[in-house]
Length: 378
Image (cartoon, rainbow, N blue to C red; front, side, top):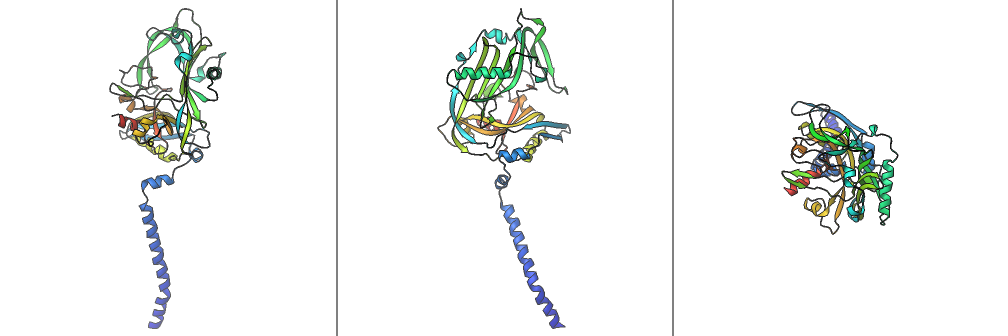
C-alpha cells in the first residue's frame, strides 16, 4: 500500500511542478502589466487619424448627472477631416495679405455704424434667401485677388457664414437660449426701419486655411481681468465682408510647411476624449455642446516653447492637432472672450450659440490647450 501511494505521489509530482511554473509565469505577467506606466499604457491606445475616423461615432449622445444633481443631455456631432495623415509641423509664413491691398468701397456702407445702424444678418443656412452671388463666388473672388499678387494654390474653407441684408437702424434685443438658462442683450438691425434706400445684400464669413486637407481653426483670445491673451495666432486665417466687386473688405494669411516633427500624429481614442468632457460636464463646467471637430491650431513658436509643446526652433509657427469643442462652459464667464463676440464685456455671460465660443484640447494628450497658455501667462 505504501509503495502504491508513493507511486501516486511520484506520478503527481510533474503535474504540480507544471502548475507551479504556470503560476509563476502568471504572476510575472501581472507584475509586468502593473509595471507599465500610465504613459506607456496610453501610448498603446493612441490612434492615427484613419483608426480614429473608423472608431469615432458620428454623434456623441449621452446623459450625464452633474455633481449638483442636474441632468445634461449631450447630442453633439463629431467631425473628423477626410485626410490620410495628420502631420505635426513647424511652419514659416507663406503670405500675409495687408488690409490696404484688400478693401474697396465705403466701410460704413459695408458694416454700418455700431451705435445707430447695422445690416440685417442671418446665420442659419436654412434661412438664407436666394442670391445671385454665392459664397463660392466670393471665395473665387478672394483667390483671384490673391493670385493677382502671386499667392496662388491655397486651400481654404469658409466658416461662420452670415447673410448680409439691407442696412437698418438698430434696436435693442435680448437673446435667450431655448432652456432660458443663458441670455444677454445685443443690438440688432430693425427691418422695419431701413436706412435710406440701401437694398444691397452680401456675405460675411471667416476663412480657414487647409493644410494636408485639414482645417486650421480660427484664433481665440482669453480675457483675464482687464488683460487679453491670445493662445494662437492669426496665421492661416482670413475674413471676408462682400457686397459686390466695388464694395468688399477681405484679408488672408497663410503658413507653409518648414519641418515635419511627427509624420502622422498619434491621438487619444474616442473613449478618452469623451471621458475628459464627461468629467467637465459632471463638475458643472461644460453645460452645453454644439459640436466637436478635429483640426489644427497654429501656435507661435515662442509661446509653444514656453508652455512645453515643442523644443527651441528658428521657425515662427507650429501646427498641432486639436479637438475643438464648441458650446457653453462656465470658464467663459470668467476668462474667455473671443474677439468676434457681439456682446458687451460687462455682461455676466458671453455666449454665441452659432459659432464663436469653444474649448481646445490637444488631440495627442487630451490636455486643454487654452489652459496651458493661461498658466504660462499667469
